[in-house]
Length: 181
Image (cartoon, rainbow, N blue to C red):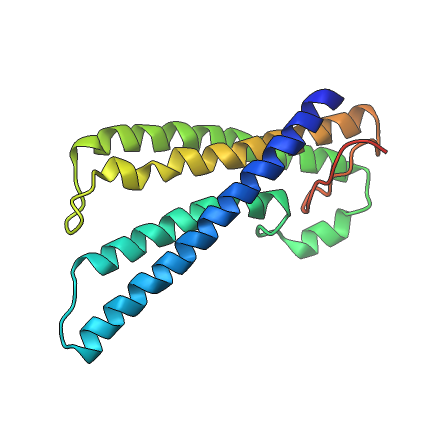
């Protein structure tokens, strides 16, 4: 199990880094498109129809690409009162495992549904850009797949901690940082 966790750790570290760079590039691209749109609309009195559609698509892609990093480093929503109440209780290992297992199962379902949506949208096109909607929806299985890899790593760490308590560093509602002790 150690080898699998180490491989997933390296793969997830690189994939989340690449996804983060891509999302940051999309953020700056979106900013540029919005600035062009505002300039043309309010300074020149003319506007493009494609700028809103492109910036919206870039924003969706950006969010899906930041999602794996958010899950990896525990930047997702949690119920702090609940977590604080049972944080040091032994049951937390089981609660965390159950939560992460639920997340992983839902992500696998989301990958499947996202792929289906992408496949069905292959013959439809965006209004302004005339891009196949499959390109727009392709981020769903990609983004959910990246998060599922992160979730799988976290799940294996939690299972490993049930077998060997404290062996793997993982905070149920925070980051997981490397195997071993």
